[in-house]
Image (cartoon, rainbow, N blue to C red; front, side):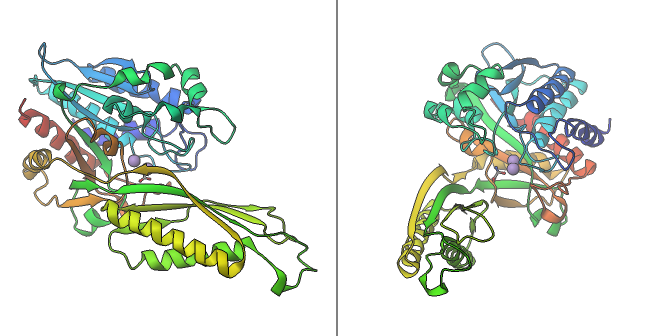
Length: 405
Ligand code: HGY
Ligand code: MN
Ligand code: MN
């Protein structure tokens, strides 16, 4: 069986569960999500899994092991960014299903149960929160996020309930750590390291911490033709000072990323001076202290610009995930499992965050990266080869066979 080609074919099929055809746009609790779950159910059925969707909208496929045996979890997210790639997230679901299919085809019975998890929302694009599924299993879910709304004013609570979830039962989903062996997430690398090292797989050592901040600059608007330049309090000029200062400072901090990914302007018309700007400042780092220090620096930069440009400035953190290490034991087990199939697999950190970030509060976590063409992700050109996914499937099957209860 060409397991890698099967992965490619399945990912091509599910990529059609998208709002449009420019890459993949599949947000949680939408018709595209529902269509994707139908496709994933067919994968899980092929692997002989018992299926159900939990109260948080996670589709779970279970391969029952011996009575009373603990469970090993494998999963990733079904959602995408807007016009994203066809591998980010969903690759981890299809490779988990195919690894179990391969073990069944090889007649292997594992001494523990395995669950494949297709989480609803990791990207946090539709709602200003994310990781509801893994946080529910880890017992760290904050019900207050259910009141958050999308750009149409639909609350997460209503979207989830309308999708068949049960918002008020999410907190009952917490798993028993003593009955959970660990978690593995297979994910396209989304970076250039494996391609540069000409190797198919990478063993992830840890996942960066992340925070998202809303920043505002408030000046005054006025007629673009009549207000003299020296009498303006132009919010966009202040914001541009902030953006370039932050970018240049971040380049000097190792293992830190600062990104201003979204910006809105008011009144945003060609012949009026910008009165207000709202932008997002996302900061990531493998070390949480480095990240917090940079956030403090950003606040001081904004305050200085507020003084020099005579505008108002606010910075409010709206989201945070701490940095998490992967389990040394699981990394070693993955290293042994990949040794025969991909002996050059390096150990490397993840600059992207993942469902595994939240699963770390439940159990030991591990991640397996798959080579990413040109290191690009979150865009339609995202690509992984069938061969590399085939190597990943074999590695996961070997990893599960060798895992001890
Ligand atoms: O933003 C991230 O790192 C992830 O792709 N959601
Ligand atoms: Mn992503
Ligand atoms: Mn992802």
